[in-house]
Length: 134
Image (cartoon, rainbow, N blue to C red; front, top):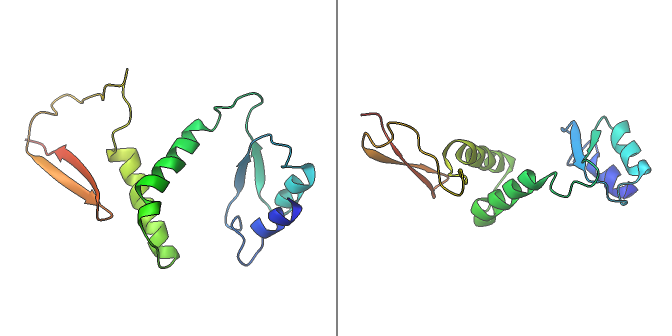
């Protein structure tokens, strides 16, 4: 794990070189030496709470969604294209995608039945139908 930490914080091509925080669970593989290497590189190690198996359930759900709905369906040629796709998906996920509502029923805003139905498309396939103001 010490070598993994050194690879992650490599100043040239380490995955964490532009990041300030990494979230780790309390698995024994994240040793004190692993955390020291990250801290020495300026990366803060945030630990999940004790006995909280669902502490990162929201993050895991987002990762599952972005992988299955976006990343596994595309081939990226360069970092710019990848970051653009992730940015578009995040906008879709937070603003347009239907999340489970109250008791499994999607909530509706008042006045939603007025206006014409339009389709907004992101990334050449993520479609969101919405009504424009009447």
